[in-house]
Length: 382
Image (cartoon, rainbow, N blue to C red; front, side):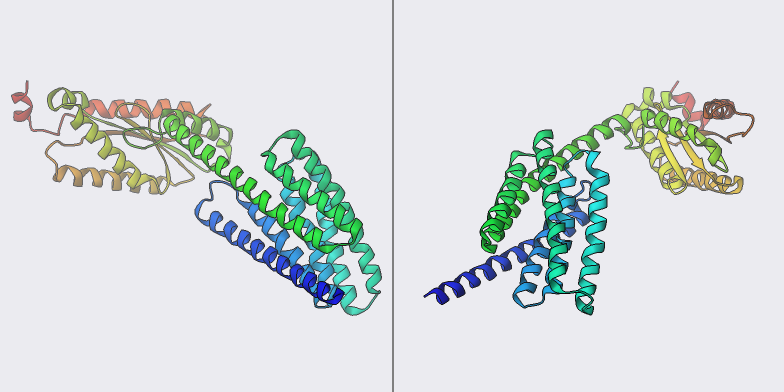
C-alpha cells in the first residue's frame, strides 16, 4: 500500500513538473511573439518567468534521472531569471547587490557543474554550495518582494504570487516535501502571469496614449510632417552637438501666391498644394535629413554631415519633382527656396543659420513671378 502511494505521489510530481515545463516554454514563446510584434513595451518579464519555470522543471527532471550535476546546474541558474523578474519592479537601490548575486550564481553554478563532471570534489560539497546560493537568493527574493509590496509598483496579485512562493518554499523545505514546493511554484507562475499580463496591457495602453499625444503635439495634422514644436525641439538638441557635425544645412521652402490660390479657388486647393509639396519634400529629403512644416506654407529641412555637391544634387532632384507635378496639374505649384550651411567660427548659433536662410528665401521670392497661370489668365481673375 505504501509502495503504491509512493509511486502515485511520484507520478503526480512528474505530471506537475511537466506542466511547469510546458508553461515555462509557453511564456518564452509569448515573449518572442510580443517582442516581435508589440515591441513598443518591454515584455522581458514573460521571458524571466518562463526561464525560471523551465530551468526549475529541468532541474527536477534531471534529479529524477539520477543526473545530479545537471540538477544543480539548472537549479542554480533558475535563480537568475527569478531575481531579474523581481528586480524589474523594484527601485534601483538593489541594483548593485543583484548584479553581484547574478554573476556569482552564474560562475558558481557552472564551476560546480564542471567540477562534478570531472570528479574534482564530491557531490555532497556541490549540494552544500548550491543550497547556500539558493538560501541567499531566497533572502534577496523575499526582500525584493517586500519592496514591491511597499512601493506598490505592480498589482496586489503579484505580491500574492510572491507570498505563495515564499510560504510554499518554507513549508516544503521544513516538511521535506518537494510536491509542496512544486505546487507553490506552479501557483506562483499562474498568478504572476496574470499580474504581468495586466501590467503589460496597461503599459501598452499608456504607451499608445503617450504616442498619440506626442503626435498631436509634434505632428502637423494636414501633412503628417513634423511641426514647429518638433522643429524647435530638434534645434535645441542639435545646438548642443553642433561642433560634432562636419556640416549642418538648412533648406527653407515656401509656396508662391498661396494667398491668391486660396482667395480665388478656395482653401481646399491651397491645402492640396501644401500637402503635395510636403509629400515631395519628404520623398526627396527624408533619406538625408529631417523635414518640418513650421508655418502655413513654410517648410524647412535640417541636414547633417553632407557635402555641398550632395545638397545641390538633392535640391535639383526636388525641383525636378515639382516640374513633373506641374506638367500634370492645372493649378501650378511654384516655390521659393533658400539654403545655406552653418558657418563654424562665424555663426553663434543655429538660429543665425535659420535667419540667413530665411533672408535668402525672401530674396529669391521677390525675384519669382506668379507662374502657375499665364499673364492672360491672371488678368482674367482680376
